[in-house]
Length: 280
Image (cartoon, rainbow, N blue to C red; front, top):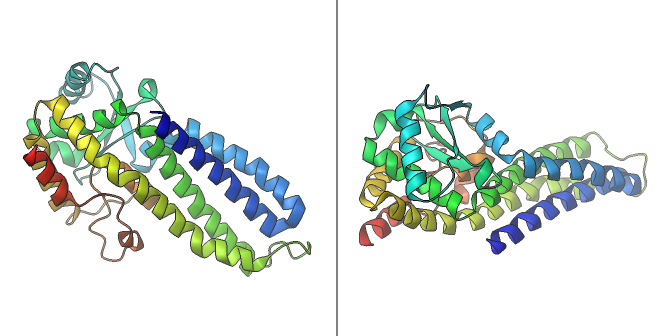
């Protein structure tokens, strides 16, 4: 838990630093203070609203025991088995089978599944997937993943702004501005964001698989679920911000034919995850 907390605040500090550097590159010394002010707003937003960003990206809506009784009961049963607080339950109408968890702590946790997941998987497999997401919550790593996604989104936006500023002469009235720094930032910042997400996400997926198998009472249902999801994500597209892809149980952008993010996969190979589940 302490390690993930440290990673979270390191990410947020890095995000704030990027805003300061970009402000300085665009507006010199004055830009530094402007970048600091804007960075503080984005850092606070990344921490407090990371769950809202995730569910908005998924076009998901919250469900209740009345509106989705079977799904709600399934999540409640597994949360009880894990001795956890009941998370909020969200449903995305996306036809691709997938799921994710988000939120800054257990009290604010969200488990979101897609309509496709409920239609493609049988009940035992859905339980395996939900148990995996609950394991993310129990391991206290949903905050670091959510913040990493928010940071990646912010870095992408910053890179776009840096390109615009460099092309149209940002900071031309300030001799301290540096257009070359803007171009370098625009090129390398998105790459850094993907590397950060890759380093954070890969190891925690194995741990969530193991924890999910413990909660569900076995790993075979989750293994079958991963096989089905892996097959469908290659066939059925999902339109989400690439920065949010690492939050899902299987990369939802796998099926895209042209995808720069594929150069740096944020998820470990699904085949290896299935092998480990069945070997346990």
